Length: 161
Image 1: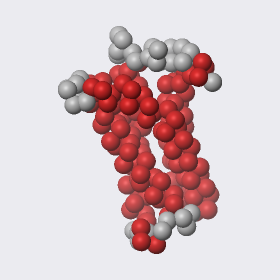
Image 2: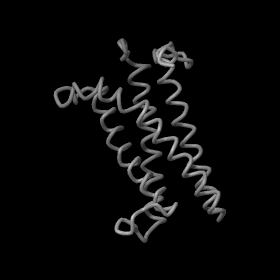
Image 3: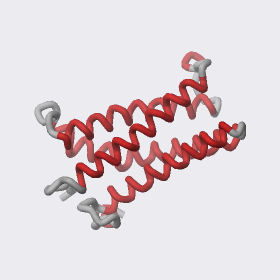
Image 4: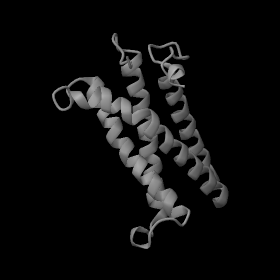
C-alpha cells in the first residue's frame, strides 16, 4: 500500500497518488456533507444524520491517516521562522481551520447519535451544525489552495524519501 501512495499522482501535477486521492476524497466528503444538508432542508432527518455521520467518520480517518503526518513532517519544522512563506502559512491556516471543523464535526456527530456525555451536550443544535458545515467548506477550499501551492506552483514539491 505504501508503494502505491508514493507513486506519481493521477491529476497530472507534481503530487503523488496519496495527495491526489486525498484531494478527491475530501471533495467527495464535502459533496456528501452538502447532500446531507439537502436532506435536512427536506426534513429527512434520519437520512441527513446517516449521511453526515458517514462523511464525518470517513473524514476523520483521512485526516488522521493522510494529513497529520505530512503537516508534522513538512510544516512543523519550519514554524515559526518560515510562516512568512505561502507554503507554511497557508498550510498552517488550513490545519487550524481544519482542526476547528474536525472538532465541531465530531462533536455534532457524537451529539446527533446520542453519544455525547450530558455535560457537553448543547441546545442550539442547528447553529452548531451550520457553523461546523461552514468551517468544513472553508477547510476544503483552503485544502485546494494547499494542494495548488504544494504541487502545482512549487518547483520542489514535498516528497517522502
